[in-house]
Image (cartoon, rainbow, N blue to C red; front, side, top):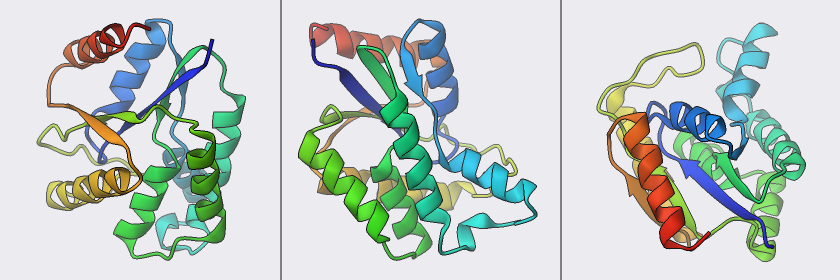
Length: 181
């Protein structure tokens, strides 16, 4: 049976992590987001704003790739992807590095991910963290960049509007069942 790999995406503060945790509890294979861990490690090394470093995107791509290639399970949920990293680079005004372009080309060539992407809409508020220093208006702009990026690469967003974690996971399950998993 072909593995089914779904991307969960959205702007910072959309509730992706909570949905991923519930999917994991429900027995699905999940692949952790890389950007937050790259930021945390860089900050632990004394870099206050790692996203300003030109090598930031490459570090995210490398960790994402390592995690996606190690993933197991017939149905997988990936908390973000290289396409999100492209959206991040675009939003930050960084050029797309060769490593990211190569990763995206490989993902598209291999048809690695399902074409339908679970796109979590913003909840309407942002809880700041050490890694998340974005306000709601910037998050809305970032959300629009994410959507444009995914559509430009031929993905079809399945929008999950603001709701409880239980309701959002139920919507994902309904989508999977409708596609006869």
